[in-house]
Length: 420
Image (cartoon, rainbow, N blue to C red; front, side, top):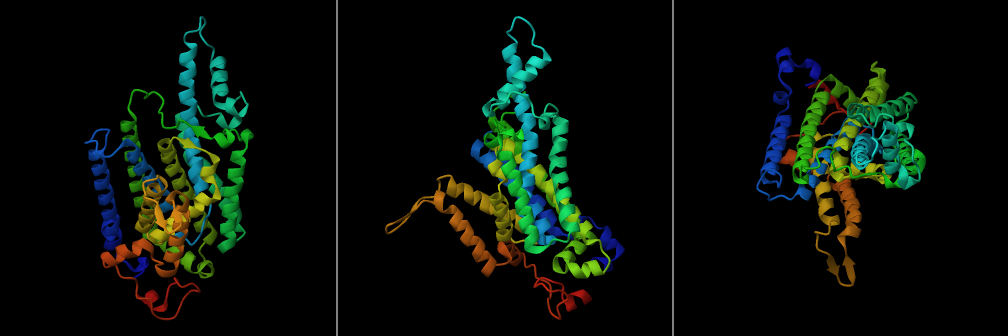
């Protein structure tokens, strides 16, 4: 039954009642957050280490950016290989303030013992020399004009990735670039951004990136065990809000239109819908979600450099969503969490090496091979991903897909579905 044929009382029901999976997800996330808090070193029993709390917090940020990727790819059909660029921009935006403010406090304290009070210009020069001395500069680049203001840098977390996505999407969609060509363009955008950031004169310290982001200014006496828990809570809250927003977005008419665009863009355009406008809205909103995720991730990671926005990172993101099951919001979350935690286990030296005859497999080196094989296996044998197992356990049946095709793709709407 289509959304347009629903009765008025049905449409007025809360989202969590119309879609119980949303309520289930939020409850599971709340219980998980509470459990980790009670077992943490910060205020709990001390069972879970601070480093693992940070790993879990970063994993929740990956889940949020995977939600964005699933919305743009799984629901709208745009395979973007550049969304980790938006993730990185959000990290750089908040990282600039963290680095500036922390350095300012150091410079002010060091100049406090001078015979004469330091002037604002002397303080500014000291901050610039401290931050940019590593790249042979001593002046603030124009891009750091608002680094002193936390509200403006928080706004940049949204504006920077959103504006880049808006401009890029407008140029690409108005030219009606689709399919693999659009994917290549998004990858080229990411590569261009990464190459620019690698330059020392980019204003963001080149290959050195921004470091020391885990040290919150003015909270030097607060232990990292507590700070990491704060970021873990913020990441969980952002993921819950992001999931609720994405579920609301795809549950109504807007969601029906973007799924129709995914299945048969030409038919949707023929029906009079502004296809390019819908795609631009989805692309921009998901870029903003990715930026927010990055702003929460990098203070937990402690450092950000241009390698974080390289094209390979966006390819990994697509792999996470594919393994989790695209077209299912919970599938994207499961895939990102599963692969991220498994990656931490394999690359962190916790997985035992494997010896097969003369072959010695060290998982630190072989993890990417295993991930690639997993992606191929899921694509060939389990296209629904891990989310398909959830559907099976919850006895969620696929729609009755019989009758003549109404679109060219295998996932397109079919005749009998249109009548239901």
